[in-house]
Length: 463
Image 1 (cartoon, one colour):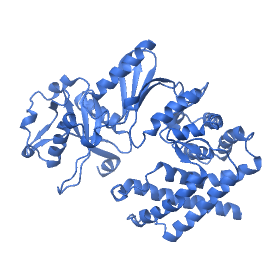
Image 2 (image 1 turned 120 degrees about the vertical axis):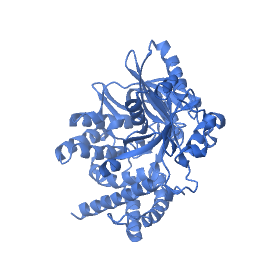
Image 3 (image 1 turned 90 degrees about the vertical axis):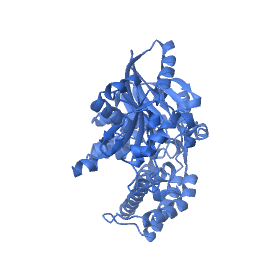
Image 4 (image 1 turned 30 degrees about the horizontal axis):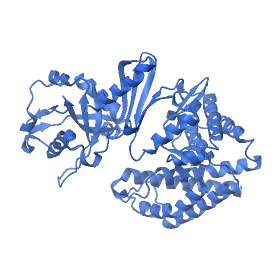
């Protein structure tokens, strides 16, 4: 049982019917309780909660948004809550035919006072628009129905119609990711909010400038920061263990980046991350000063802390590596700071690159390094295959870059790419870092990784 608890998360759900007029509650000797669902840890929340509701009650539900419920001085730790609603609201009566009027629910009705706070907040969903998220488009009941209606409206002129099969992958007050099956293939609806609002503009720019490398754009809804795309044909790179497919992805990545060389000002204007040399150099000192504080706060004893002296030495080596990389004159290009096999679809016609929330402009070899790290996990110990993978990328750049720099660049990129990601894609300067232990732990692990990469550069040069 202990192992099960370690591998799963428990969510208390507010499962509403009839646009918030009905709520599923469980009775116990000590009072009413919200249902608890256990889902795999580290996986997407929405599809797993939806699947559990289907398994437990045979109800088709969709997630609306996670719910923050402050402890408010209660003795126990806070719980995780998620607001959900039924796709067929009348179905709730089949599972729970005996309803208590919502107005009759009092704090003493509940076995856990936190559940009462969650219900009170959930019942205000429509009336106050979630004060902090009042500008968020999906913080109301009926969200899924509104999204579906809009998608259906966009598909009709294309001769497509929904077949009822959906897969909801993400759901917050401002972020949605849903796959809709149609009579011919499938389409994807995506909407973004902070901190990934830039993805809306970046995606629109990429579909205009490089349509052969990104999914086909079918429609846009600007007030939701949402768009609809055709599902990319082919196979996800994560689904294949064929190293040739990975080489093809590396080759096509280089082609996309070379095509982007004259588009970088426009990409930066869309809000793409700026990982050009000077911007990274400007970030070195404040980043590593923050890392001293973050490392000092480590309580875990199974991995060693980096001392302030080690962090300052690492800061110097990152600075040196960035300066050296800049001297090679590699042109700035489009980057994907979250390039992994889940974001690449391969087909006989080429490759499609997905999910540009971490689109950036800077040294193109950063993206190669992110994908190479994924390659090493899928093909451990296959040095010849790794060389083929790297060469597939580098060969596309040879007409532009001097051969004599190639080896030096490949030595420097593991360290500088790790720093570019940490300094640009992560909120390392969040003043509430003490309340985000998982982020702090991830930053510490990246610092330790940079320390290892730095040591390898020193060792290779000594050899």
